[in-house]
Image (cartoon, rainbow, N blue to C red):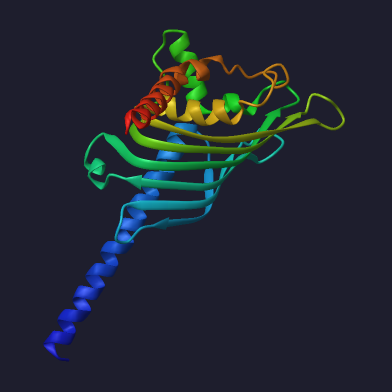
Length: 239
């Protein structure tokens, strides 16, 4: 075989292996990060990793309930887009330039014993430990997000203490909000959960306290409001 053809074959093979390795590594990092933040199993229909750019698109991601709950799904994520800083893989902190998190459905469940599935989220347990002045169980990855576009659809609350069938209440969240400079995973997950439930009644969803999550997002929301004010003022000053 011609040496040039052999060299071309080796180059093609090496590039293909590198691209496959990139896909594998990025997918593993993404799945591990989400599972670490939630403490729950996740699955996705498809994960597309950019070949010539630093983007990831995830379609129809599912966050699963713990096996003890009567339904499998906690949340359906329609679409997750991430534009990441590839050099952050060599540091302890994951830096994300842009993120779109589109929550199609949050399935809030109160089981027969009165337990709420949202309390199974690892971040909720960690915030409870912080509230008790204890060290959170398990390490959280460092995350910095420059820009987040959060969307929310429907929330369904099912109370399985009401035999023989669950009492069902539905809420339309209709969340479409943008945030900047999220500096830790507590802010990120607190934003996603609390803002997804913003249109629900806290008295209706019994067994889950939104207060710790809302306290986490105060700074982020105030920063976003300040950024909007600055943008409006800057536009008003233009001739």
